Image 1 (cartoon, rainbow, N blue to C red):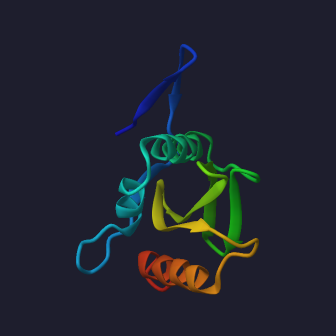
Image 2: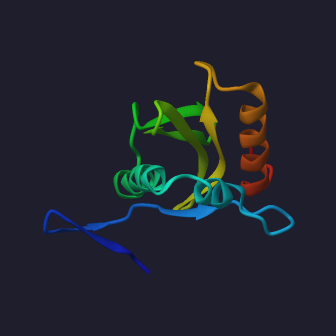
Length: 127
């Protein structure tokens, strides 16, 4: 099944479909993170995720590769904050693994480790 988007009068097919990582307890941490954002910030992050879905593979500055099969969507949000959504790709699915507001120039070690752990769970130990 394909989802089509209409952009400037053109039909654009998504190249990958975003989905949320689920914990063993069926929680969706990235969805919960997004729900806590302001409506304006949700719109900004959602637009960037949609752009990745339609334009994949896409590079810097919107997407940055962090590790093997691990990328981040980079979105500027209100109050000069920077939102990061870590994801992996499995088949035609972009799995949103972890989200946080970045406060330092370097990705915090705890966030990186959590992203890698969830990537490994999703990819079944392939990495």
